[in-house]
Image (cartoon, rainbow, N blue to C red; front, side):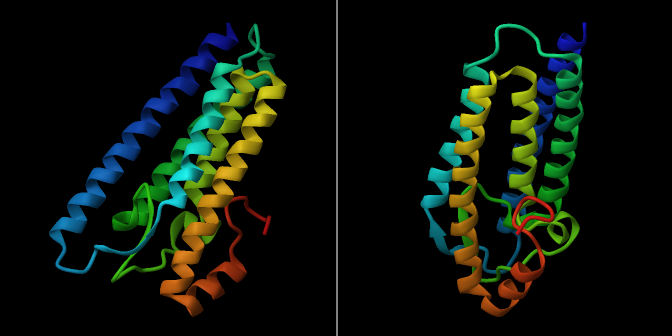
Length: 192
């Protein structure tokens, strides 16, 4: 009985995650268009989209190479606990990122370094929330081999995105970003 409920929780969290992403993107687009400030990208990177592709592939592997039956109650309930935490972190991050929430890595003419909310804990809390979702999904459904492959692909994709975004931020605000980077870990708390 624990597996169907845990699966329903995790899948429901995906629905909420998607709603938050779409609502956050629409809200940031509306705010950018209404503001009189320079919100047009001054620099962007297509490489961040390659990282996103690897992250997406990692989730496809988790769900495409599932274990034959449900896992233990401990795995299922851990998955069911991590998914809502991931959604909460994602929503908190999108809220604090505001007009800077985009799919592709860009900096704008009036770009501001966001260091409040979850950005005090990690520089890339959205990637942390996606990592939590991947772990949740892996615990719930994946064979251990596919979970490890998915995790490796996810980390590779996330590292691409982190490096691209940080290079853009460092080019726009070198001193502020260097100080922020020195004191706040990338996307896993306590791990520099």
